[in-house]
Length: 282
View 1 (spheres, rainbow, N blue to C red):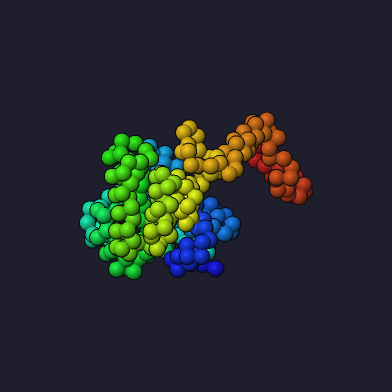
View 2: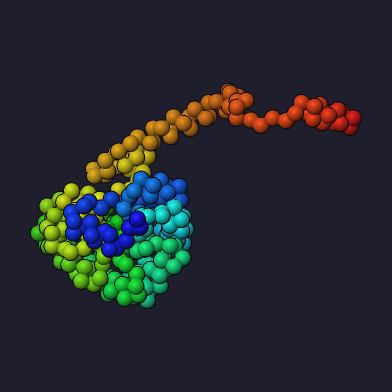
């Protein structure tokens, strides 16, 4: 059954946890969809895990459209959410609506996600008024990395915690259908989840949220270097990939690959005829 805004809301109301993962290509989206994940986020995190940037800021609308198109082709039942990249919605309400519309119309997403609280409520309302579902994003908002001075836990003092609660209520009032809570204390996320009627999706925000989301490369052990505290490794695919690539390199260099079972054949008499004909021209 196709996951929708209505089914995700129903899950919150019934207490059934919502599952969400990132995907950036057709193959991964198809596998996640076949496993039954409720929602797939085409995150601007692709800038870091797919394009090699240090943060999400360089990601463009063209980047997001390219990857969203691929994911939407592979997601038959999952609810596809596409991130609005940096400066695609902050500049004006007009830009916000136009770019959100492109992610739906051209990209094939069912919703868009944007970062921020009170300062983006007008954009959220305008996008929703254009019949496009909007998912909010509060706490550690990666597009504000330069303001935060790095990727740091948010909402740890009273003022900032209170603002996140206020912002959550404001974006809900503006029409958001769900909100991602990233890197905030679990107790704060629990308060927000209880106060909101829309689903909360946590990433580093504890298990009281209505659902969880992870970057799939993190949870499969495919990333190197520092990984966030919240990124539990559910499988060590990275090691398997290293083993597979190394085995391919070794067998190719030694000549053991491709073996007979990996090759195609032709009748001997045809080969002999070809050799004879070639020999006449020497």
